[in-house]
Image (tube, rainbow, N blue to C red; front, side):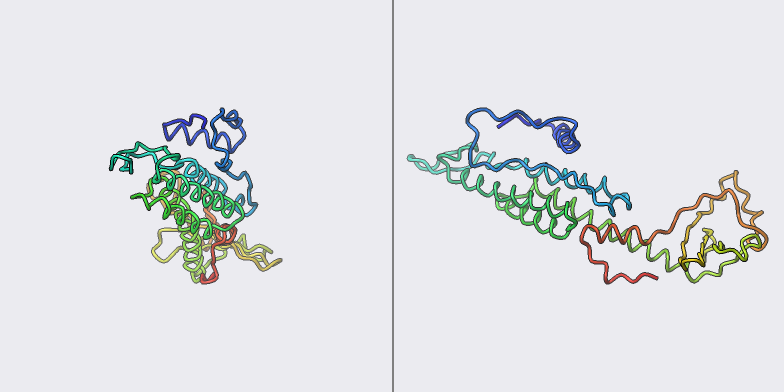
Length: 277
């Protein structure tokens, strides 16, 4: 087989380069290649439009790279173990599939795990993170027959974290939207009578100013929020009077529920149990 970098960081860089097309695939393997060995998987370069809009594309690509690294990381028995011999118990250093039952079995199991990993990459690329998680867990279970799962464990963790983070973003966005929807909003004089009515409110503990934009043309409502920082000398919070004028010079962060929801659904996460205010 072609030499692969021993340094994990260098190996990860190679995977990234292959995924982005910045380098070509290694040259064909020399004679001696196992003809039954499956072709190596390559990370998907597919970009789901919803994920791109929700700024999750980079995260998805990173997870796919971790799975691809696992696909190439465990290829069979590479540890010293007891083996049967004509003289009784002998020791094998691994990689001896032709005469060692343990090595042969580990090689077959590693191939099964490789295929599960390729299927996981395909599932994740096609928007099914839960299926990808199940496939990676199955690969880790195969590897763990030999004591632990140092290769597939990180892949399982990466996919699980992807799902958990997406759900957390959705939950936080929904909670934020619920928290501000019941506030008492004030429309400054210059914003009254407009098609898009912009109003403002302080949150319950007075730590944020919330801006609400209500569009009468399409009946949509958008919220954004400013965190009050009294240490910021560039903003005179004492002069802000919402009844007499809109606050100026503030930075606003949009409370986006649709984006996280779309991102979670785009990778196959069921959000039906989440209630949007």
